[in-house]
Image (cartoon, rainbow, N blue to C red; front, side):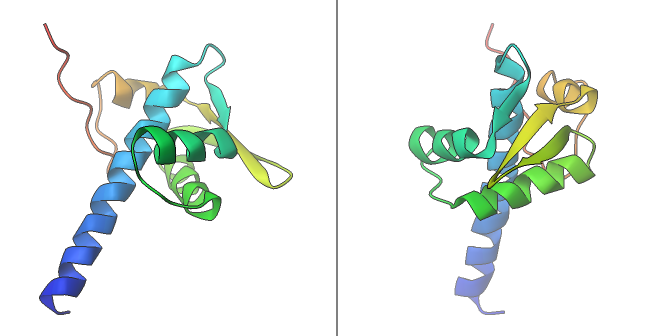
Length: 108
């Protein structure tokens, strides 16, 4: 792989890890611990400037489900994600989930 391709691959991996943390944090802030993929797509795009489509968000949700961080349910053309215990523990910095960016240290 050339330098440009390697850089692009690293950037995409970084964005996936970042988006997965954004998803977990967004779910943790919701009283129900759940959100639709369309909502998460908008948050990732509009608040964090990661312009990706819903299919990309679905792949991130599927990854988080494989890691035991969220439960995912199909609801028509969207998916509904619900935060699980492991996902909350990652957000709280109690564990580290591979492929998900670590949350920043709390500001004192």
